[in-house]
Image (tube, rainbow, N blue to C red; front, side, top):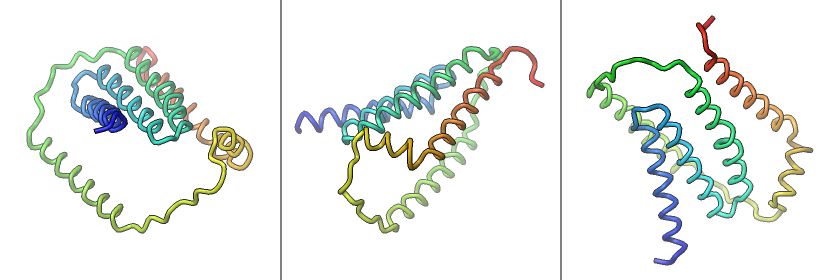
Length: 165
């Protein structure tokens, strides 16, 4: 195995470990930290694939904004004094069956879809993407920024102290 393959396997392992921990841990704060680890692994995979722009967007938007807003919402919310309820094995089995069925369905759709090869000619540098975002695709870019603003405001409202209205 080459060094490049070892680095890829290490980053993929970190990503999968973060994803599994984000789903299986019982503490919500640790779930959010595991989500950040998973998103960091995805950003590293984007760098490995040569998509530096997507890696930067992953770090800035998802880790820097969304995950931090989730952490603030968790830390500012009232503590929940609940007993750790034992999980029902029947519900776990049902959830696994539904997720397996969704996975099989998506795998069939992905395999049966003809995926045309993308054109390789054109400028895909950071400057060209930035210029395209701020000229041709300005409305969708601003719509995404408004959605993120609403998500952050919603997280702050949910985490506000006091009784909900």
